[in-house]
Image (cartoon, rainbow, N blue to C red; front, top):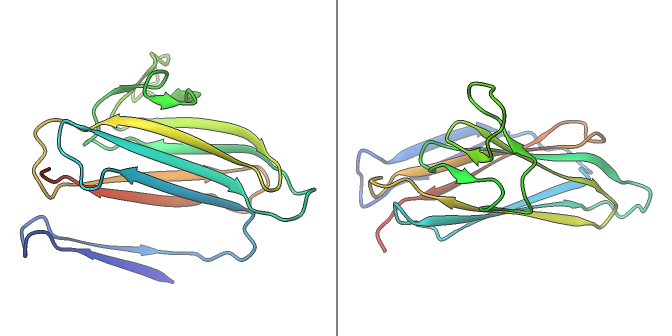
Length: 169
């Protein structure tokens, strides 16, 4: 199946976008993911608050999801932030573009990685990210964050994208 989204801003500017994505539907997936981003639109230079909640929606008590991991790819429109000060609970680490040791900062192009561990049936865990938006971005600029979630007991990873637009207050 495929999904298509069309964004028009201010009546037909060069920044209008169309996105198409192949979507796979899997029945009886025990993991649910909900992503919110506020405010939307967001002002360049302000902060954007992401909440990523992962839940084991299985109603069978002996169906835990182990080694649950959330991967948040940082787009270029988000400025560097601290994985210990701007992320709750603290992220496990951010990958570095040059594979150096983790310095506690998460930058554009890197991937913030966080694990709530094992989720028993009915359990949820939430990651909060207080992301600074880069200065000087034009109104209508789209910020798209790819988020992937894996677990040992899943057949496949869950891939989600959250898009927010830059706009004036």
